[in-house]
Amino acid sequence: MLETCTSCGRKFAPQYAYQVAMVPQPGGAPERRFFCHLECRRAALGEAAFSTRRARKLAILNQKGGTGKTTTAVNLAAGLAERGFETLLIDTDAQGNVGASLGVKGDRSLYHVLVEGQDAADVAVPVRGSLDVITADATLAVAEVWLARLDQDRDRILAKRMGSAHRRYQFILLDCGPSLSLLNQNALTYADEVLIPVSCDYLALVGVKQVLKTLKDIERHLGHSVPIAGVLPTFYDARIRLAKEAVATLRGHFKDRLLDPIRRSTRLAEAPSHRQTIFEYDNSSTGAEDYRRLVERIVGSDRPAASSHRMPSAQASEYPRAV
Image 1 (cartoon, rainbow, N blue to C red):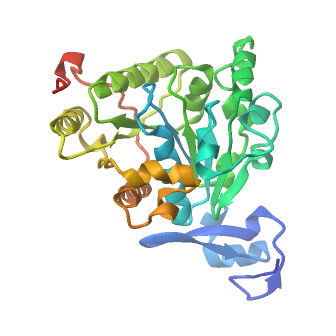
Image 2: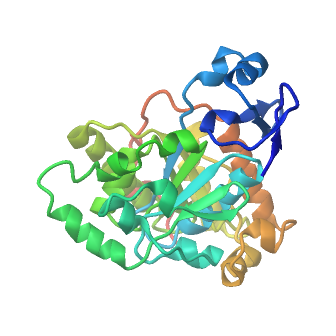
């Protein structure tokens, strides 16, 4: 396909990575620009055009099940892609719910990246616009066993296998399973930040404490700090006192790291059965509104400068009792 050079207007067929650039726009999504020669790119963008791009890598994790991790991963990734950001979503859970939610089944999965060392770019499946997905299936259970048998660096295989993927994308999201597994440890040692979805129910604080302990263990034993990008209340219903108390308790502990809640929504629950994101299924729903707000918060936030794992005086007894 022929493209038009942004600088000189010449028609050409892009063949090299430097010939395509995503250029940030004030208050909007980045725009794709094309350049036929290095001189044209330098003339338009200056020397900064040749700095190495590095994706923001977010692990979406809660060791407690049923907190909306996959819903958040899918819709956050879709929202970022909708804004024009090149986004890769990686499913690290053998249940394969990401692919099921989007109606995608790749010929190869994360297993082929981890165990066989295949290039992530070759395994990733283009889904919608700027969104690519690396799917998962039952073969990840085999990958878990394979990782367990390694003598060293079993926690860092994913980081090694992903190679230069961080230069290809602007965001890489990892949907983690509800367990403390070697796959999740690999995801955390690869990630720069962690986003913690928390359902507004009785056991929410307990689940968050488990995640915080895991992050501290990763830092202590593996020497890799994973700051908290945010804590995201999910299944929020303002009519229920317990939900409001849960959000208030989380706000007391996490302050500005607490994100605006995702409201309980029938449309959100229905979207995966139609193999669609919430933006495709019902773009005007409260779910679409809430996830679009999350996208804006993530895009507008700076990378955390230091880890903040501690949950001051967080005791299970401080959590609001069920009513």
